[in-house]
Image (cartoon, rainbow, N blue to C red; front, side):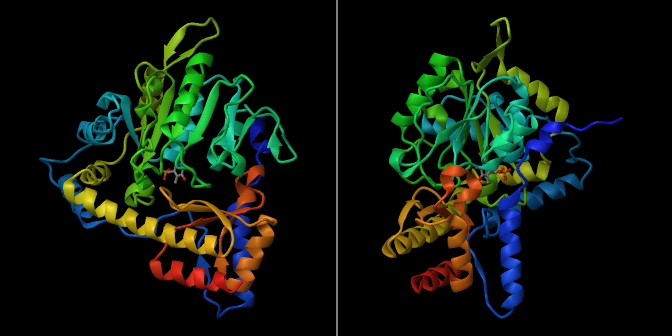
Length: 405
Ligand SMILES: *Cc1c(COP(=O)(O)O)cnc(C)c1O
């Protein structure tokens, strides 16, 4: 008899976005003429810029010509892209990363989900709360979490992010082996300073832990002092793996291209205490289970690093950041405490009431959709997330509607 992986039964049903969709569609049915503005989405709205589309098209044309046709590429990605990343994303910021420490992939979601396959199932995992649900659910699937009791998995260590700590968690008191961090954060929009991040790196070095650092929103950082990469921190090469994505950086959510950085010094241990290279293990995994990102997509990603590409991408991010500023200023002027919205496309709003109740009120009275914070974890109760991924017109209209609350 074929049997299932029973860890899947421990997953909480992906209640957040289906519940939002259900409530929005039932409202729309009873109010067919009302124009709903969706401020809940974590997806980009602006199209790919011209220089990127040009490179994309050129890559497609090369595939149509016998002389330039490409079959399977290197699983780790083409050197033309890895070298640009090493130079512009790392060397340029004073971080030493060589091109062969970079693994191109089709998404940071899959990479953050797949990476935990390299680690033992009985390690202790520390995960922020509130959080991007992928980190939790993939560890549930792997059998690392135990059962969910009252909204929390019994074997996870939750790193609470609250107004008291400015949504940057304290170091855990318990021993932990694997630590997830994400800055600028989804959903809170919070950022971390170099000094704060250094504490995490030192902690990981002292305790032989590994930090999984999700920097999917680094392109939104405008504050000169904030780190774009954990590898700007001394010592991080031994204890950190970083995830990046072109999804939010350059509008690639539907095009798919991302990368993971694993320095050669990054080690984990077997049960006898012998060191093993995580770079070598991930390379083995990647070459076994992945066959590379398509050539035209990698050519499109390379164009992000051209002077034109940089200008165009910056203009799009500026657009989202200006939206974020409007949302933050308006919500603050209406009397709400807000985090994020600076160096981040998300605004985390303290609504001081049940987040689903606030969601319903916003939908019914303003026809505006937000994301209830509770869906991101226990510490999200009493908060909502508003996203700046939208047109300027929608942002301004939504803020005018909320003013009437
Ligand atoms: C959007 C997002 C990603 C990017 O995922 P892709 O699979 O590359 O599109 C990664 N991490 C977080 C926290 C995100 O919000």
